[in-house]
Picture: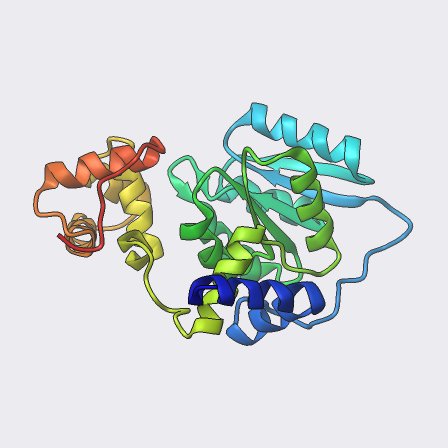
Length: 266
């Protein structure tokens, strides 16, 4: 058995024999906030869940899944940061299910805002964006789980149940990647240049991919043109891109979920 196969087997054995190990490791790494105990829920009313996604049809689909499979109430819906914060204040949900991309806004920014104003609110991210790039960012911002759109319905239901029970939910692949990283001492090793981008740079990169120019991005993010120009240069440097047209091409491919040509080195 090779070294990597042996490590995978060891980590798998640890997870199977010690279900609480994953949560303990995440807690010590700073990805699991609060206490190690589950959150108590009221027994005299249904669990209230707020849906935050900029696609109405998708929100309706998630609402139907929750109503059919869980004893819960979808107490509200929102499609951007401001309406989400207003809905939380009005409806006082037990959980918010949030997308990473909210039009021109960032779901990661929303999670950070929620944890400041409503630190006890449970947050599950449900997004089409690659978990290897966003899951750890979401957990660090304050989310309790990350699940990708397109997974089977039972997996979404499981994720909601685990988070409501006070646990962290990650896919089996993501959990093992994180644990293998810590077990092998390579937890901080970069798997893709995209992972070196800051949350703001990822946001700018995504807007570039949607066809926005520097001035448009500055207006959308309420930042100066000079700041966005600096972000663009940092992104090019980190992704080993020399020209603006290369940056635009790679950003477009990424937002379209098409194979990009970004490599660790050239």
